[in-house]
Length: 460
Ligand code: UDP
Image (cartoon, rainbow, N blue to C red; front, side, top):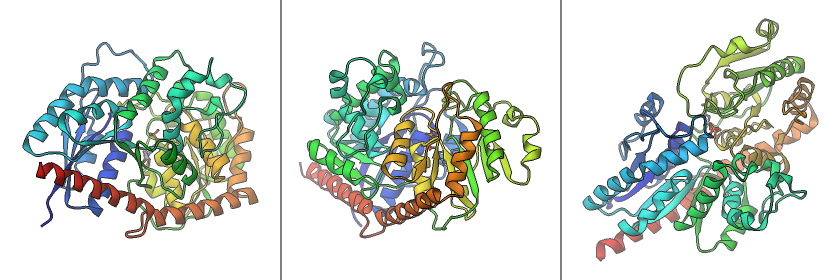
């Protein structure tokens, strides 16, 4: 029997950071069963039930360790989720180090793979002698931005959003400052400082494992590999929770803003009336309103019934056409259903990949994090999405919503987007094909590298 090669994974708190890196681990182990993964999971408070039930579904060659939750008393109230996530990982570093120490005392580790927010764990590579990587659960374009950020920070004076010209990242579609990730919208914020620090910290590792695929972002990938040749880049996606082979087309618009995105009350009103005005069928996953779009992100508490925030009479008037589900729905299953023909999405990267895998074109409604940049990639780069114009008060008006819905669901422009999404769907399927797929190949390269590293260590 082949020798077992051991690797470790460090996640950051929150299900949407935990799931992608563990889905990567599952995919890697499916293809390379002679590996074993130990996963360390930091947490802001007690580990949520949703995390525990997800962990129960993992195969036996992934061992998870729930790290002690951190002391959160002096953390800033209502801080941007990215700041809380980052601080949680930083404060968990002593327990990550202790865990690595006891693991390596038993048997050497070939590699450590850290979520982007857990970049500080890369610094343990020298002490415990393993290779180290960032698992980047978003687009190559977003990674390119991070790797160019230290330079941009030096070169650009003032706010990025005030720049008159777009930013050109090698091999990527041009992106205006206003579409850069949320932390970059205010350079004096803590969120920006941490984002910059994180981007600089990435360079302590050996490379990047990215949940994208060559055929989706080949120019960006090639440019990075050429320009930043001191790192290895592995595009291993799309990796999402469950793949589907159905072939959706047709009539229902699925509306959802990820695991924690929330709309303001006025945005909910306009969206409801816009859906009604469009006359299209829809399935809307609705959360109670908040003025902070990321308010529900790390919040597991049950909220008020979201349906009571809909405009009066809306449910009755749309009952033949639409369905509104409170808070959460099984997205992957819904998207892969034959009747779903469009996705109004906040453009979280997992949602983007899930939509690509089933060939469903998108209406972009970015809220926070790097979602605006993902929207630019989808609309301007890949041309598989339509982006509504936002009114001066920051709200998209019902007429505009109805217009983009009709454009996507009924008109030739929408059909052309669906056709291009179908092509991407085929490329995505090719990328993960068993033998010849580009992402499968990238995973094999990693396996070989880690096995060789481990053998050299054994012989020393
Ligand atoms: N998701 C889901 N049901 C929901 C909302 C989200 O299953 O009602 C899943 C979705 O399929 C995706 C993840 O949660 O896998 C959201 O990740 P994404 O990167 O799109 O957005 P984030 O939650 O990080 O903002």
